[in-house]
Length: 261
Image: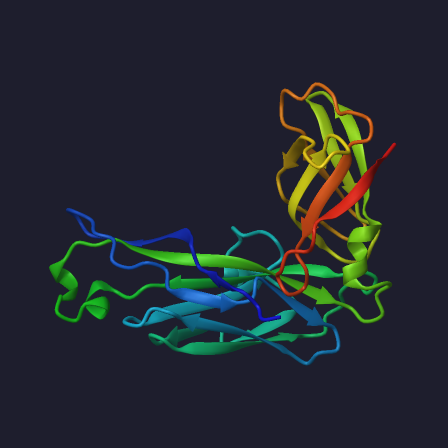
């Protein structure tokens, strides 16, 4: 199935302003093909396509990878990948393919590794956006927009298949000082990202559902999802209902799993 498009919508603190009344000039216009990227170990490179759906103005694009710290400066990050081009102009209505290559530094071979692709768009100045206005002729505020998408590095010969991993999850209910927490253990070699997690509080179709925040559980890891405050008890026979996000960025069919004691 085709990859969905994701619009850049997260604002960063890159601001150009002058004294007086501030006028926002443009909205985010860059889209990236796919909500996640899978990098098979034996591939020489993968491509990620970025497009500018603004039909009137260009964008300046900067792209880089990080290991999970979104606040670390791009020039200080050391990852085993090269990305080309890292900076480029994206004209109105055009697209650009970025090439992502693994540089062969050692990574774990028994599980996936997770990296993050950052795509930062810097909108044009007022003069670029509206040629009839001189650069100094209008007070304005400009923002840069960034999106971070997951890049899963997938070694060869991992046990099982990614689509089999959700069935291996082990769910349990814990008591803690705050009340209850739903714990999920992932024994597989694959990351599992949840779109929705809930407890069904009975066996009937109209049984009460107790929702949780979405999250991701890493290979061999444990994720704890706190039960909302005010829940005094969980009935026997409660089941976990969840959906997850597959390699194509699509949501799975609803899954059910029993709580383990």
